[in-house]
Image (cartoon, rainbow, N blue to C red; front, side, top):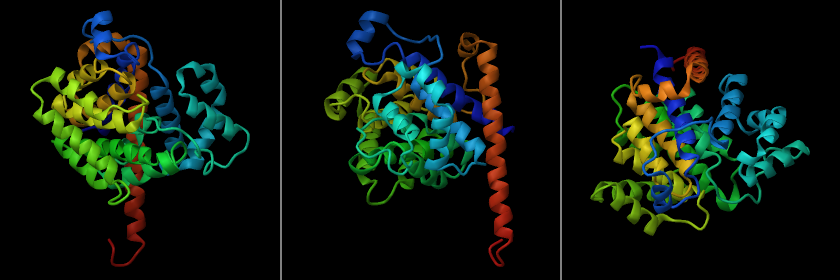
Length: 330
């Protein structure tokens, strides 16, 4: 099967999740129901979740898949005008990092003092794709990249990004279920320093399994997992894993559950869409989504999926070639 076809539901799932969750962002579940009823349609091109993923994909493609904080920072600086043109869509701490980079601060230092957020986890799915089938490699690279935004007291946000990237990488495998992807993602986190995020995600998945229905889960989730800041990855990432599990990995259902969940809906739906897109297979994209996106947007997603698939294959070939140079390894 063409690898690009396997990647496409991840690209579209993340983008549609962002767009479907954008109108409900910041609202409670009750306010969403009162204002919109049940949200299952979308329009527009999303928020900073999609823009940040685009910057990250560009960094991966420009570096042959080896991007770290320096390469990602270079995209922020090189595409600063693009970011500033849509600065109203970016989280304030991301804009702060962008300004520090513009003024010459080292990429290894710009994250000091940033607040907790999901700014790395929400856009990390391209890392899962280029490391398709290798969740530990995806987590390792995600840890390195997330350090551009989150270090020190908020380094648990690195764990969040690593978990999402690893779940996407694992979910791409044939016949993978959301349960499989979640288990491998949790195993890929740092054994000691990642334990807090591992427990949060595990507890959220367990809560989803015990809830009587979606509404019951949502009520119990916010009673237990809410943080002072809605975009805190300790709230959003466990929610995305739990909702993807509650949906059984179904792409359309997962994104709808997330878009109607409340609080940071665009980010939760983006991550849920990426993970469900990975396990859903090439036929997971609803025809209604394709029609709503329009041919130009679909072609753009297909082009990105194809480029990331080519990069993933080249990275595997490069690793294989290097193994051949060491006697006894190959």
